[in-house]
Image (cartoon, rainbow, N blue to C red; front, side, top):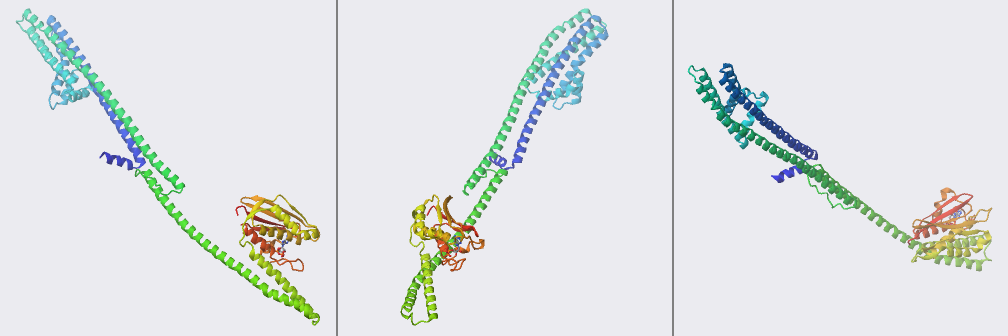
Amino acid sequence: MKRSVFRWFRDISIAKKLYFTVGIMALLIAIELVVLFFSINTLSSVRAYVGGEGLWSKAQKDGLYQMLKYARTHDEADYEKFQEYLKVNMGDHKARLELSKPDPNLDTVRQGFEEGRNHPEDVDGMIKLFRRFHSNSYIHRAIVAWTKADETILDFVALGRRLHEEINSPIHSPGGIDALLNQIDPLNDRLTPQEDEFSYALGEGSRWLEGVVLRLLFIVALTVECTGLILAITVSRGIQKGLTEILLASRAVKEGNYGRKARAYSADEIGTLANNFNSMADELYKLEQENQEVYSSLERKVRQRTQELESTNQELEQFAYVASHDLQEPLRTISGFVDLLKKEYREKLDGNGHIYLNYLSQASDRMKTLIKDLLDYSRIGREKKAMPVNCNNLLDEVIADLGKSIRESGARISTGHLPVLNAYPTELKLLFQNLVANSIKFRHPERAPEIIVSAAQEGGKWQFAVSDNGIGIERQFLERIFIIFQRLHSRTQYEGSGIGLAHCKKIVELHQGHIWAEASPGQGSRFFFTINKDL
Ligand code: ADP
């Protein structure tokens, strides 16, 4: 039972928990107020009895005085006054008698108390006190004292009546009146302790009641405080515990741990939130999982495609190598026979024959160059290893190799501080050589070439620049020039086969970098390339 109430409270909504807490508090405060109201009423009724006792005692004393006066004066008016005073005591007597019955007539009781000169507003409270608490030891003692005093009062009334008869008797003797008057003192002596007992019993009763009421109020107030505190702590702990769970689970999700679920301690809003959070995390997990699958399949496809491309590339390179290598042999035969023809049949040939022979010789030379270039191209990066290369030393070698054309063109080449880096030395030298040679070859007819080679660090790469003040390149050709055998000029204008920049591109890619050009026609060109630091 206790467990199910606890579970019920745990699972109701937070709003209901708060209503419940406030409701319980309100109920306890209402109980406290009822207790207070009841206690005040009871104490006020006790006070009414104490007041009534005062009136009762005064009426008895006044009656006694009138009786003594009547004995002296024999005036009927004094006897009537005596009777009038004792009506107060008789009224209370009437009320007590009726109240002692199991089913009292409350109108008679009310009438009795009012004759006893009690305030009408106090009467109902006095009735309730008598009926509710007659078995309480203090009230019982007071009722016993009251009953005894009532009996004495009846004796008192009877004494008064006998005095009246004696005085009005035609044969009365002064001795008879004296004998009656002598009975007053013992009666009075009996009454005084009975009145005292009544007052004491009520006084003690009211003190006892005050104590009980104070204790009761204290207990109820303490219960209100404790219940409020316990409920507030229970509710806030429940909320805090649930929220901490959700917080921890969300942190785990943030770190990629989807297995850490938020425990739902209750079925209230926090518990629902925890469950919703868990399903959200599950959804998220599935979604990532799905993404992972898509990503993996994409990765697989890319890898497959790369492998395919690499093997195609290798096949092509192999083909180019084999083709150019195998072409050399028949070409050598052709140029050998061209040389023989020139040597042995020179005289037998006419003018046209000489011209054709020259064309044949030039064409076979050109084919030799093309085949050599193609062979070089297909050899780039074959079974080579990267090693530390000092670029300044490399440039010095290039400048020495190009010494003749540098001198002839009057070119000035400046190289700043270039790095030592991990690279393929032969290929890197060829790269610089091609770029510098092009800068000299495509120089402006009106000025000597000015060539600057520089390098700078860009993230994980070195970025090189070779700039010149040559003829420049039209914007639309800036990409085409890197394609093998693509040229912008005829061979009569500029020597070359159009493979130099294709070589450069292949070498740069071997160094996991890329190459591009910027240029303005008539002003100059600038070639950039990057080289990965971690080769
Ligand atoms: P080639 O030098 O044999 O013509 P390349 O591949 O080296 O072949 O160059 C391709 C083309 O790019 C050249 O024909 C030329 O038009 C252009 N080019 C290359 N370098 C420069 C340069 N420094 N200035 C102007 N044009 C250039």
